[in-house]
Image 1 (cartoon, one colour):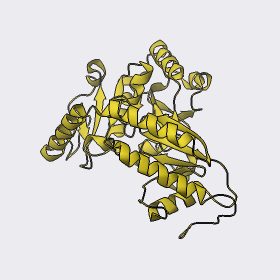
Image 2 (cartoon, one colour):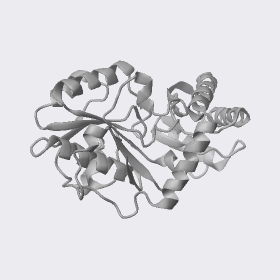
Image 3 (cartoon, helix red, strand yellow):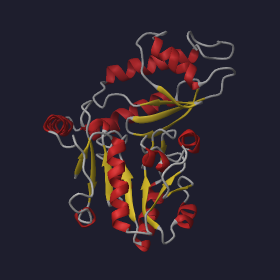
Image 4 (cartoon, helix red, strand yellow):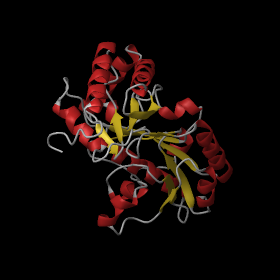
Length: 308
């Protein structure tokens, strides 16, 4: 376990570990289109969103992208230069897109066949958010490397890169370091957070609350569908002329129909919901009512909300 200060730093550690594992000439990391892995130059290039790359070109070489959830396309990318595959079990920034379990199992098989590392970015999805301690566990897949951050410190900056011992051992003293990683305040906070998560059975709570939220929102007029895992959900909206998910977010934040709700427009047509893992049933019910009322006011001819 290597402690860092953020998810991007955790992913940088994973990328460097992959390059050290592969050796010179076998350094490429393959990730998926639609992915998000950070804002440093390397993790930005690992991010499968070309529009985000353009203003920062040239980016570090050694990154390649495959079509999301397409085993055949991923297999085409795995030549002798590839050291690792880096995936999210649920694409968060890409639109809350869960990976089919069979896809992840096939990726594991391909990585085993080619001697390639399978690395999971669990920065957004890990630590109970998706109804398991880590989202990839739902598919029963064993990773080589896992990165995490966000929930680990509950607001205190900390990230971590975990690797199996035989993989981590390729790092030698001086290969990787950070000034503040693993400092006592952050690690003590993480330890306290994990103790509460265990006591509150956070994965079980997220699975139950997420199921309740998904079922209720699926029946709300204006909702075309709900996707995701646990308490990481995307609410796909039915199209309304001259109104986007971003406009709905503005109304939710303004509290036009009661409690202010923090959501974001993860795509032009979808709201991403990632509430507290300790959200109560009463808070869920109130949120559902507010979202329903907001969407009702966004019907045909409703116009844009204030500030849109």
